[in-house]
Image (tube, rainbow, N blue to C red; front, side, top):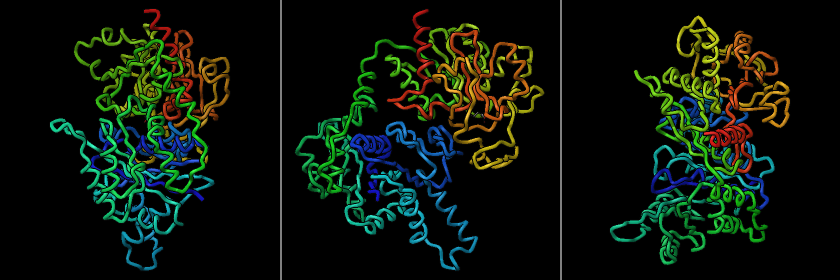
Length: 544
Ligand code: GLN
């Protein structure tokens, strides 16, 4: 039976709890344990699918088609364990399920209440689908004391009581701020936060103290004394030079041994950290650098492109180079006197990422054109692929080529797809229907054309599976027109109807994909498309 680790945060938000959970998962895994990491999100949205990337960062999509919190991306990148719908729940989803049951009469007339109905639902979520895991880590979003998180805290309190002794552990992540004027680290916020948690009936077993300066032994002992934990269970978590250093650093500080000790496990094998040493070695000792221009819409907030950012870094790790990412707002190419060349000439590669809506699309098309005409490596992802097709169609004489996403057009090179086959059977969508959860979501196969550039990139594979999140498709009716212009459809859905990959054989590296390869890249297993794109950018950097 799985053991449970509950991870809560205190003092302030943005302490990097997600990364901490991912790192602890990676450490336990490196000791040979089977782990799974889950996220409880206290907000009322049913899932993050309809939330603005500006506010909430990217939506991470799983193989089974769930639109989830971006922390699931950290978990998957650090453990390699493919995240599932069952790994992310929000208050909105919990209430949606409860209200549906209430309407069906499932509660047989009982008064439906936060305790026990909401808390039971949360506990069921935590306990579901344990398989043969050794550890299930549950991260609770938000900060202790938030009104929204109270039912989650109550559910944890109950679970800690109900599961056999020794099967649960509470890790609390806090901040130990440095007050420059006094030249001191302050432990009081941590004390208050632990008290707040204790008032909810949860006594932490391990404290992970985020700090900018090393935590002296005296302060560590003081926190231990006031917070009712062993001194060794107060783990200093100094700011790390890179996220890839975090698992190694937390191991040095004793996090995994202390967690195991909390479960009474003292004879666990030492973790095999070879893959993390290799990743950090590659990261900190690059043998060159490349600059990639990412022409997008949400460039002000890097969390909006979290996985993309990571996958580009992974592409750099694969080639032992540093990847400098230049975030470029597509709209600057739509001004009266756009200077595309001045902006894009210094780039060794140009990437147009996924996105929604018309804003910035002409600017993105201008950057596709620049990449095509100047033989600069180009990578178009999802909307980026769709725009690459529109750009080609326009050069091939279809001047009005556009996407129906941007309004009515008589040249719908990109249009809405209303029916498609998924594992569950025929899926349907209506043009004016709900926005949430109605896209083509999750893993779908693509068949690769033999002897194509992408089949070489995927080491000769004939069929691949990648994750999707889109409502529109490139219109296969334009295939022959585009192929005559040199844009080859080198990947199609198995039924041959939906274009999945396009490429230009007459260009050094020009690939557009309808899916999101960035979601499956890992630091220790960089995605081949990103490894290939960065390799092409490296060749480009040697030309200029
Ligand atoms: N907006 C486009 C669509 O819905 C592309 C989506 C994306 O890039 N994720 O098809």
